[in-house]
Length: 313
Image (cartoon, rainbow, N blue to C red; front, side, top):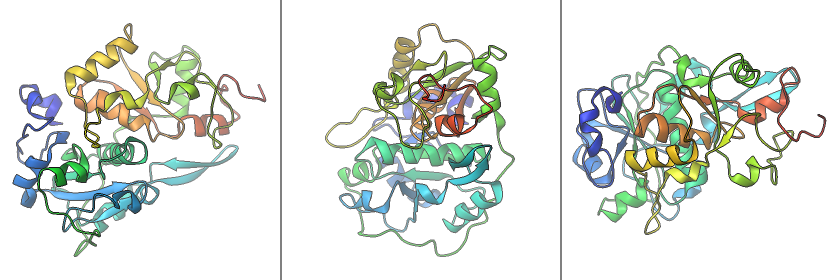
């Protein structure tokens, strides 16, 4: 990945500074001016929780849309169906091909840019899945369509269908990017060393609130809180990313003693993808993984240790 391989260009990634294309690589975050300059060199994909999130912003011309529900899947678990998971390689490959993407295309993922939850978080989840299947040349548009429009970029009322399927091929999964329930259980049992990082709002971390698809309240034993929304800096109604120094400051303040591998989790692997992106891709930290099933999978599996506060404990 460019940020880690070429740290000398890290300062040109964010907040109005252009990031160059090096062959098939793009920087993890690119701004609207950069996309306008390189529009013919990259493939854009709009994404959000639902297409209606673009109602106020419109869409960048000639770019398709994919909803979060279209690129997640479900699988049977020991005690019920586990939802919100990364799909099998062939299914993800077909989806990205339908977006008109070839394997050598630099891809820029475009949220609406007006909200964090269900928009910026969806963009980072799609980004993580592309990286998981080996596509290095992928970036996020800082501020999404809202930033694009604010800089004078043209918008249209609806996304387009890709004119033809692309030739994208999913690569081998990158296991270092994904944490499994078995690995998390080993960490909880002190059989494996990693910091468990809870990226949910603090009310959920403390057990004051919980999602209906998580069978319990509280957090994984030993986990530390680091809410996902600390990594973005909305201004003028547009959601921008914090830069690498700011991300590093947030992590150091919340996890001052954290060294070595980290596992980000939430309720379903959705909002934790935003924290993973900030820590792994913007800050360039090594050994940061995402627990795909997160607490939804953890609490459905009766063979695993239970989260704190589960009523049946």
